[in-house]
Image 1 (cartoon, one colour):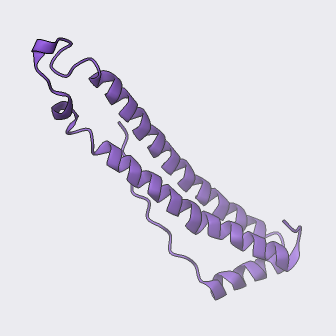
Image 2: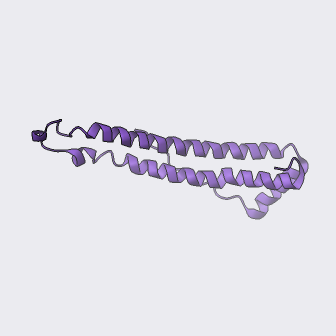
Image 3: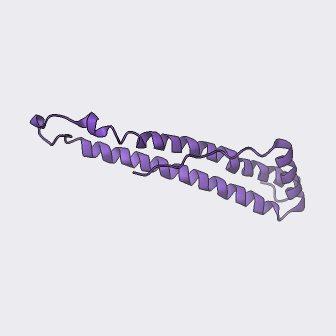
Length: 130
């Protein structure tokens, strides 16, 4: 990354765009996957129900391990979504604040935001936790 000037402003714009558009878009994918995994909770009892005749309880011996695995995956997906969104916010803040230190960079940063347009912020569904 250049230290000053127009080139720095262009790099700051790319950094800001990654934080504003790219990372939130990826965060939304993880949050959507998290919510899909969370939605499997309701039907697990029916999927694992079996006759007591086989032993191990009505849900069988695999049910607790399967539930733990599902909950761990759900948590990983939720944390990843939250972390990606927070990283995007941090990139936008860093680019905006750094632009204030160099007049030429700030001008180029502002020009690119006007010319290229500010991408709409991607809505990241709130993740669900187990």
